Length: 381
Image 1: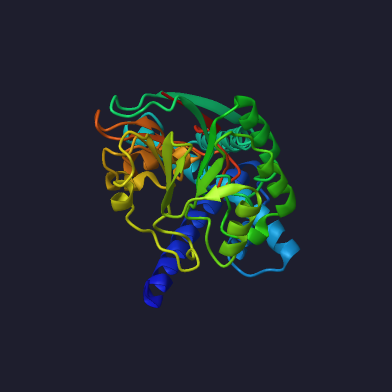
Image 2: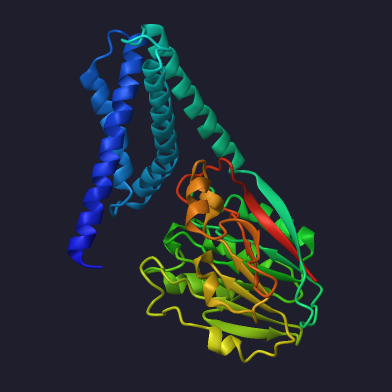
């Protein structure tokens, strides 16, 4: 990507963010002035401007404690920003349509303006509050998958977790509960299809504790992982070392035969943020063709956008990445981008089964609205 393209992309993002904040700030002020008639618009503009600007500071190299404070504030602010923008826009459209249909007088009466403003604020508080609470909950989802008749049935239980995003807000707090829930399921194999970390290993507050918890995972066939787009960057090698020290076997465009019962492969993500220290995703299909066709073949591939790369010799593809949009209306977007953005999918009887999890953690906003943090249990027969 050229420097000119990067400058253009950053400028466009700042323009969109700035414009959205002008709209939100204007709508907030118009409602507040109905209640607090003496509010000074310049004081309000300065306060709101500082709040909006703090979000941008997270992209700068700040000292540790300040960076943590800014990142935490920015994570929550992003969710508030999204829902203020959404609800003010929805209500403004409704009021506009009401005026066109002569259901609402023009100019809009003060009581209508106040009630519509209050409704937007209430909906924002409700969605953000619920989202924060729901992000602390971990659900369990189960799928039953049958292999093709030509394949020897492994009759095994696989537990899948994706998108831990260790280093993100609240990510380490839920890890102990995740490990306990997984072990209670008594899996034969544990699979982690990517985004174990959140871009920066140094953001993990207690790597030693993380490693200790990973070591507590129990599965006769072991714990296997592949890399997601957030598992790269300048601290990539520290991430890999922690996984190795935690007895998690990392598959980087390679496969293993386990107990002569099944084959497990892992593909690198095609778009790692700041790279995998020189590693690039390879086409695995030729090497996968060499596997005994009677052995069930399971593939870990973080992003489900690559489904067409795999042929009928693959029995099951495990992915994450999408978060199912994480917060409404994000799921409407991911549903349009991916053939399958969540759940179980099979194109036809000869195609691989695909299971995409919404992930067990959150990225960016520590919120879940319309989606859940989940642990997936697969009964493979």
